[in-house]
Image (cartoon, rainbow, N blue to C red; front, side):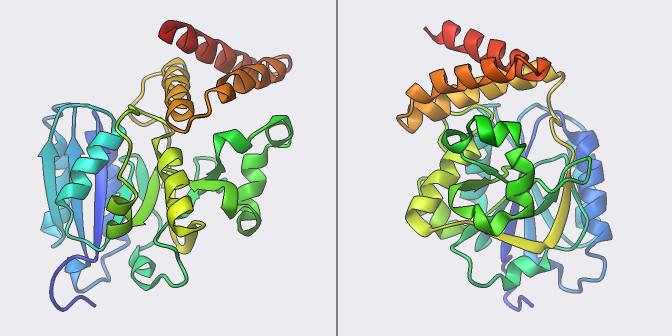
Length: 285
């Protein structure tokens, strides 16, 4: 499979108080790769930015089973910054940015055989409710009809019709290493949320539509390092503001405010999103 013992895939995971989640992540990976003889096809790079003293113990079973794994400790400058550190140390031809609250439900070997891809994409991702959540539409493409009809469900069920305006969920993003650096890496103005949307936007412009490797299946818990829904919405609002700024779409913020306000007539969740975004905008002003 990999005779020169150089890894083909570098799996990069940014960790923030994630050692409990990482134990499950590691266990699920080992369970689905016990049958693999040559373990050198991949390497793990864990970026620990919370001084979690238990991360070494959580990661250690990988080495016990013959997989190469390293841990890099750094300051918490955001998800994208952590991913960039991992990418700079990676030896693989393919970079896989994988969240710590991920569970592997299959092996990842099909990533080595991917054909007809443009150098970036994702895998089949399942949410806790088993709903497919591999991709999402770019923020500027989501309007009232999309939200009312729950478009996020349909674009995943009928993904081949929606790939041109979609981005890969950042919980499992795969990118050819050369393409990643050519595209300019993750934008470190983001701290959390929408950094993958902005990167995928650049990858699409430079390389074409994304690819979904459906033979690789994972489950994503979501919100693994955050303590409350309110915290999630605040961070999401800040990420959206940054996205609008770096993509020169600052008028999109007012459109989103109007959208959330309208949806908030029927939905408490969208009322909360409206207030989170409005408050975040007012802080910046």
